[in-house]
Every structure is written in structure tokens, then in C-alpha cells.
Image 1: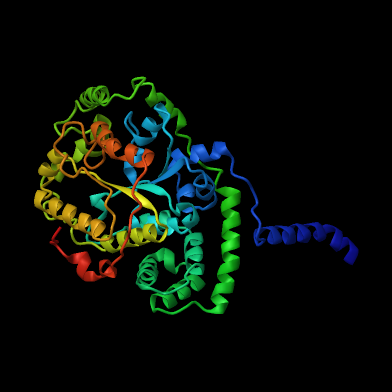
Image 2 (image 1 turned 120 degrees about the vertical axis):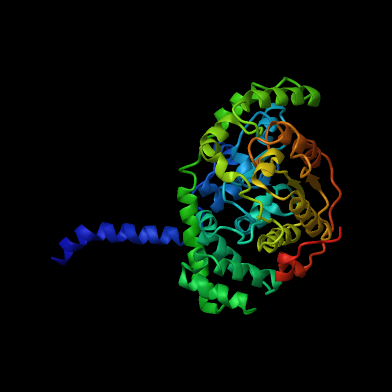
Length: 418
């Protein structure tokens, strides 16, 4: 009887034990191909953003440069950074790390999975003013791009408990995601209080990290969106050789062609789908909005601190908002200027001086594709800063971080002296 039971259940038990051993082993379970890397650089897929193995593999090649941002990357047109880099065979390939809903806190924790790949590298970071609302990052959006692999890796890497660690731990605890796993939650609470995690917590996190890494290795490459055909189609619109004047003329023509159904200079499809039916509701809708008081300023400081820790040289892009639309909605011009001054101060006072500030270009025709995203002429203007920054030798920056940017006082400060 026992022998029969063994013959029936033995292979199942053996397979389960083998799977268990594989999942918790310290070895990688697969290899990321060049095809997957190239596809992932354009994909904007959540599994790529929240995972490790694909980002780690792709960014091990110097030609791939991380471009951090949000939904602006998903609006492809002929002047999109990925299209220009492809058409003109540039020495770099943008690795798009951003999607609708990604903000500073998401970027900070996803960076924890590629700290080695960020060391002494260059990067591009698009700062969206719309992130800096009073309530800060949306909890549901953060949760969508969060993986426990990020927090386990971060917790295991804490060698000292400083202001950055304490703030990051508390911010993660502010999110439902940070409380979903009891051991991770308790470890975060210790870090937030300035304490080290316990030996038992560390042991648990080591095995949890291995399990999550193997899950990432097995499944992250299964669902990656392929945007290459879209890129190839757009490159055919471009002249054979890069001529800014010719490209700007093309941008104007494209803008004229695609903004015929509204008076705001907004892409026809975006206007028809998102705004036409409820346009009247937006009249003066944003007159009390502010981007100058937000926990996002301290979340952004986490990102800056990680760049400094990795000695990453960064080009920051500050886009404008569509001026015609902002006037219609009542969004304060004075407030937008205050935001620009505040974010520039946070950057420059700590040694981040590569800034492409386009915030005063909101009235330039066809600069924006919709209400808040760079469009035909906007991406061309950004390219004038991005391309030389990435292709020419840059001065090594010296960063001097200041913990005051984690304070409530800074989050709510209205005016700064630049």
C-alpha cells in the first residue's frame, strides 16, 4: 500500500520539492535576450517598470540610457526621443521608465533594483508639475507599479539609518502597498523609527527576495508591449538628415494637421475623446489648484538622493502646460512661476545644474500635444538639451544634499530665493 502511494504521490512531491528548491535558490533561472531588451526599452509595460531582471540586463549595456518620467513617454510622435534616436542612429537608446501614474516615489523604489546599473551613468528625468498636488502621489497609482521586490531589496540594502531612509520608510507605510506584507510592514516601521531591522526580519527578507527575483525572471518577459512598429512608422516621416529648421517646419505642419477641431492647440483625438463632451465643466475648474505645496517635493528629494548616491549625472526637463487651456481652466500663471522657482532651487542648491527649463513655452504653437504633455515642437526643443548632454562629455557634478527638503516646511513653502 505504501509503495502504491509512493508511486502515485512521489513524483508530485518530488516535483514540488524541486520547484521549491529552484524558487529559493540563489541562481538566475533565465537569460534576457537582446530582442527582449530592445523591446523593453520602448514598452512602458508595468511588469518592466516594477521588475528587476529586464531593467538590470538592459541597463548593463551603456547604449541604453534611463529616461524617467510619466505619461508623456506614451504619446509617440515623430519628435519623440525614441524616434529621433532610432532615425538618426544615435549612440544612445532611451530606456523609457515611466507611464501614466508614475511619480517620484515610484521612481525611487524602482531605482532600488538597478543601483549598480545607475552608478556613474547619465540619465534623463522629466519633471511633471502635475505631480505636485496637495495630496501627493495617488495611492492606487503607486500600488499599480509597486512590487514587494522593491521594498525587500531596499530594506536589505540599508547599511545606515539616515533621514532619507526614515522618510522613505514612512512614505511606503503611508501606502496600502507598504502594509500588505506583515514582515515588510514591521521592518519598515523599525526603519522609520531609526532602528535596524531584526535578524529574523533579515532572514525572512533574504528568502522572500530570492522568491520574488525568480518570479520576476520567469514571468516578466511574457507580457511586453511591442512599440517598435510604431517607432519605425514614425521614422519614415523624418528627413534623411537631422536639420533643426526642417524638423521645426515639419512639426508646425504636423501640429496644424492634428489640431483642427478645437481652439486650444490640442491633438484632435485627445480633444474628441477626453474634452469635447465636458469642455464647459473645465471652465475655471483649476483656479484654486496649486503645485507649490505638496509632499511630492520630498518624494522628489528621494530621487535626487538616489542619483547623488549613484553618482548619476542627470538632465532634467521641466515642461510647460498648455497656456490656452490653462487660461480657460483658470490655472494661475503666478503659481506656475512659483513652482518653477521652487523646483529649480531644490535642484540647483544641491548641485543638479543640468536643467532644460521649458516652463515658459506654453504659448508656443504646437509645443504641446494636449493640455500637459510635450508635443511636436516641444520634444524638438527638449532634444536640443538631451542629445548634446548624452553624446558629449559632461563635467562631473558635485552633489551636496540637504535634509531640509524632507521637511513639512519645505513641502508647504511658497516662495524661494533663487
